[in-house]
Length: 376
Image (tube, rainbow, N blue to C red; front, side, top):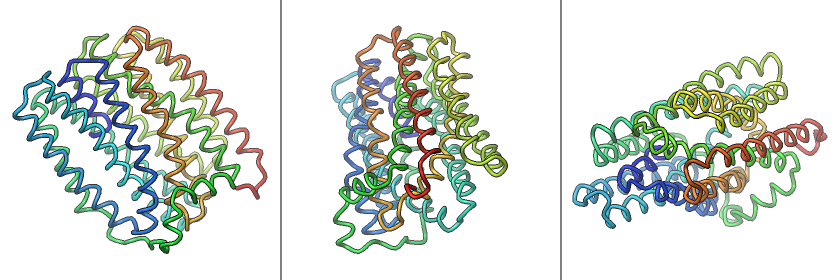
């Protein structure tokens, strides 16, 4: 609801495609800065404490914004400032809870040994189930209940997450190790060529995905004349396709292994992204983005399984923070691009992103396949 609902809220409040693109950038830029702190806090204080604190803070922040929007009229400077600040601050808090959850998931993967890909598939299935509901719920509530109801619902889910969060605290690192923070992550990334290539491939893929996420609300609402609920429905349909692909990839990896599944998923993802650039109907966007996310879901199972094997447990939080920091760089760039490019020209930008995605994934998978085992 945060990732997809807040940009829709900005568009509904400001009626501006430029501000929606800027809000998408504001939602992601602070997240990048948050990772310099989040990994260190998780390594130092553990997953449970960090996760609960982030969820509680987000609930309070969203409720405060809901109160503000009840007394401010839409398209006024006060309302615009409120939703733009909300986009930035919720992005930060979301990443603290994300790093905590990913660290706990990596611990579960290591304990699973050779069945780590099954653990990652289950974790991704949980993510995608939430993503299946979140965008559609955001769009429907925004259309029929308004911003205050949507934000109150989001706050309720944040409080529920805090209540149901991790019960078992992962072992915090010693203070000296935690204080190394981001530097430890960079050192780990530099010492593992396989991890560096893995991150490079994901950055290329995320660049295309970020542009789709930033562009779709603007294209669907302003160019195709559909509602916010229709824009949210696209990502819910995409989440369903991704969930099915994740379930299928779990069995496919058991049968054929990581590399064949990764290669097929990369080809499907890049081809579908290129096709999105040529789409000119709502149905075309819905179907093709669902295919993109299906390929992305399978690819993520492969890459997250490899990541859990590559990063040493004692510096996982810090190294994860560095890798995800790099993976998030395309998102604010995509928001700024959407703000700068006329909606009718966004298809050309998506075409370029699809070409770069295909090249990046091909090179990364080839290098990962040929690196000696010692590098991993």
